Image (tube, rainbow, N blue to C red; front, side):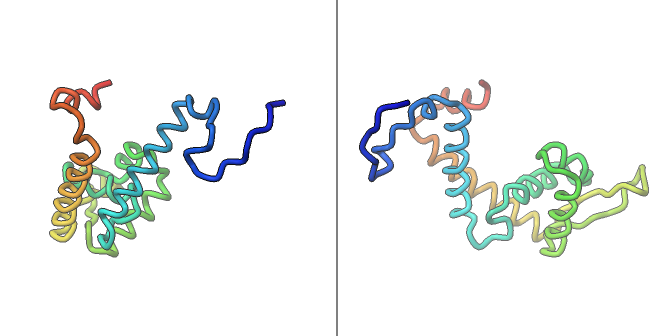
Length: 148
């Protein structure tokens, strides 16, 4: 049994113990901070509070005609969640579905002009966020940050 310590009053007074050395804790903490900041930046846009929407929008923008099942695999969503997401984005007039050329049972996804404009705006806002978060890194450090 651990010795009793004073009950903390402020976040900085909390001793995380082994939790403070756990990679999963720090990754989750960073993810939450970045996601909250992004939600604030995207407030009022159709993709606010939805990383699945953001990922789907940007993937379709980069790969017009992509199948929903492939996006689901890339963003690690099950097919039913992906179907709901596509339905919602279609209702928001961000994308359209077309029957696949090779396989009439498959769907190909394309952004509408509204979706394409939103994708451009999201790219601008996420670049601004990235610039803020990594402003203390050198150009070399920035180029290496995702190559670990």
